Amino acid sequence: MERRRSLKPVESDRRPTVLLVDDDRELRSIIARALDARGWHVVTAGDGLSALQILEAFYVDAVVSDLHIPGPTGEKLLESARRFSPKCRLILLSGWVTRAARERAEAVGAAIFEKPIELEDLIQELNGGRQEA
Image (tube, rainbow, N blue to C red; front, top):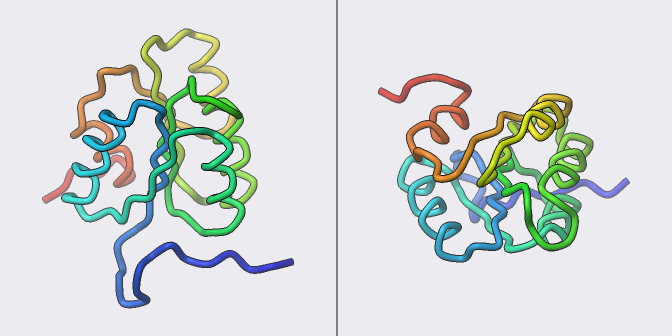
């Protein structure tokens, strides 16, 4: 089995890596900038297939995905992410969170947030529920 590589630009970069997946380029950019400013190394994808290719090749500490993305849905993507990285933090985003979507997210150990998302809530969830100092 081939070992997946880190996506970090240099080995001395100790920031955790998050894969951010959303087909809305502007929203993806806003969230990516906010996460980068808060200490995360951010890798982005605009669809499920590109995100799966990243997950197959590289280790990530967290995945944040929109539920409705082209290719494999965000839900399917998080299921795959859980198989690749059992300890990785998973977060699903949706413009409309139904009870069924919440139950499916919880089944794979993912948090789910409704858009528009409060960036501070997302960052707190990525940090394991801890408030930043």
